[in-house]
Image 1 (cartoon, rainbow, N blue to C red):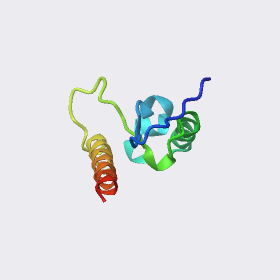
Image 2: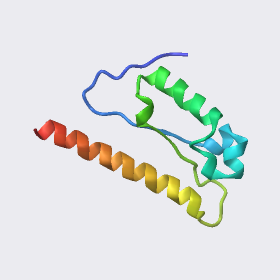
Image 3: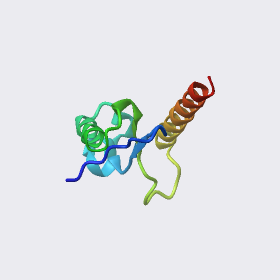
Image 4: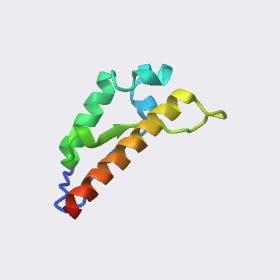
Length: 97
């Protein structure tokens, strides 16, 4: 396994996708995404590999074979988008000061 460390001053976030493949409990119920140990361990491995803090890793489920939208999946995606935008806004404010 190769390890990468980002030395740039550009803030990094990671989208941890296909969580339903990584954890059968999440596949059954997306609401378990933040309680799953399997997802936590995947996020931890990602943090160690890329040097990104755990608070900057966002697990999300891909719309893959679904024919209809799922409000629970949408909620996770919208939460992730809101957090990324908030993080970007905070970083922009830090650079402008």
